[in-house]
Image (cartoon, rainbow, N blue to C red; front, side):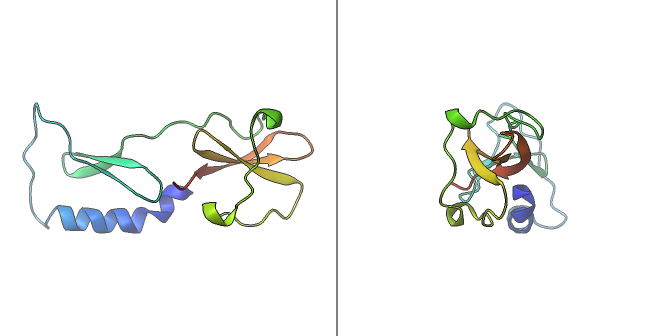
Length: 118
């Protein structure tokens, strides 16, 4: 999954931001501290001592759903998105920042690949 790729980076970010043994006072009435990962655009906000993904959205389509292939364009530059080459009867599509693997014969979603890189 795309988020798993960023766990080491997020862990390093957390290690730098909160020293071992330190406690943070609860912030009431102030805006939360947030950071954005430049690679994906994912936004993490600090809640207490934890960083929480705050812009997680559910995919528009799930595996098995009919996919409107004629309403969306196929992804052609796979390297830009870090995707492996197409080696079967399926294609990649990008919809609302989410990449889908879609069957070329049945036009159904085979897999929700994950969020697109920005």
